[in-house]
Amino acid sequence: MARVTTQFVCQSCATVHRKWSGKCDTCGEWNTIVEESDDTNVPRGVSKAGGKPVAFTSLDGAPEESPRRLTGLAEFDQVCGGGLVPGSALLVGGDPGIGKSTLLLQAAALLARAGVTVAYISGEEAIDQIRLRAARLGLADTPVDLASATNIRDILAALDAPNSAEIAIIDSIQTMYAENLDSAPGTVAQVRTCAQELIRVAKRRGVTMILVGHVTKEGAIAGPRVLEHMVDAVLYFEGERENQFRLLRAVKNRFGATNEIGVFEMTDTGLTEVENPSELFIAGHRDATSGSAVFAGIEGTRPLLVEIQALVAPTPLGTPRRAVVGWDSSRLAMIIAVLQTRCGMNLGAHDVYLNVAGGLRVGEPAADLAVAAALVSAHLEQPLPPRTVVFGEIGLGGEVRSVGQADARLREAEKLGFERALTPPLGTGGKSGSSRAPTRLDVSEIARLRDLFNRFNVAPQRGNLATA
Image (cartoon, rainbow, N blue to C red; front, side, top):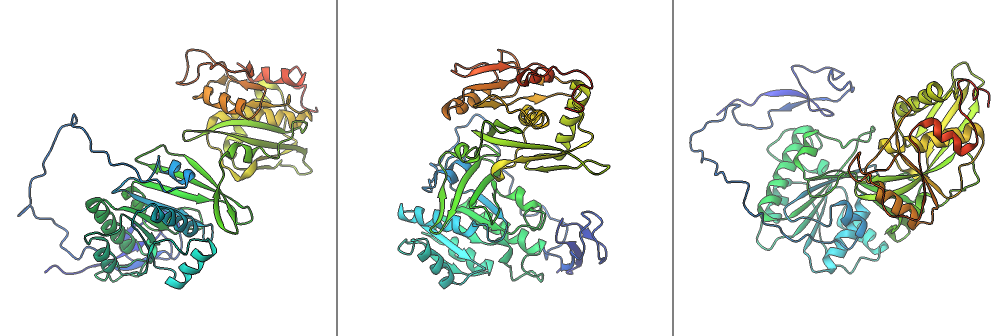
């Protein structure tokens, strides 16, 4: 029998060290290195004796597609790609108290009412605590199978039995432990081993496995990074505790689009769906306010309108401040540099504040033109034309580049009552989906960033906007 060895593993990045130290050289975290036994408990070499050759096949075979299971929460189903796939594994992460357990308990209750066998296994709460939450949500009469357990061997025995649950929810994976490992629950070895065993059962039995994961202070899911590679979909439940709205975002999905979002509202009776998120994010928009622009974005497959707000104020300090909420700060610096170099708008003596209203985080470059429009509007103290939507990518030469799915963006704006659109040149060429679609909107194509100033009755010349 092979001798069991010990190793020092960082609990943040899973790096193996020769000896203990206070700081991990790989990720820079302090007090995360823990001594663990060799989690395999087998010799490092793998013998080929007794192995069965793997059977190979071709690509031209017809795949067996199982029908997806709809939870009854349309927003949750859309983020998952159209429902839950049998035999898949989902990882749901989010800040403590954000509503992960509430969301999954509501989904489990709706599935159970539809005749699906659902097992809800909690390693953090007792049965009575889950019943209290179910009673508060009005779900006490649903046939959900509850259990409070942390031993992975006992859980596997229940899920791997005949007529077992079709959907299993593990809350949370960091509380599970395997008896054959000496490390504590939540360590890299325990999380990796428990998740691997649960996923193996899910694939073999066709069980939809939903794992709840804790997050670190940086917002990433705690445990080894390999956990996100093992599962089929990674969903983040985002939001501020002070704000009643929550966003469910897919950052990985083997069965659907990534960056898909679902919007929920936290109420006294649980989470309710927001059917039209665009109306939510532009609810407080005022056309007569300077420094405001409505951006038509794409989140996954969903067109979404969101308000971008900018404030430009003279700075009393030697170094102006750049504060950004919901957007990339380095991209804001690039837009400011292009406005100054190509259009002569000098913001070197001004503080710049940029905010994406509603708590949404925008990541696509198509928001460049909307940000520039908000900055110019705030600097000149002139609002954009009323009921105007803006989108387009800005290059370093001051050109406005085309973006994808322009027709979907315009249709969403038209549906919500917008009358005008500032867009990059829309033609038959360019990116896929950027051709002009039939619309009643008054579309103004902007090829150069300097053309944006025509909307404010200001001719951009080098230096003439420095003191505007």
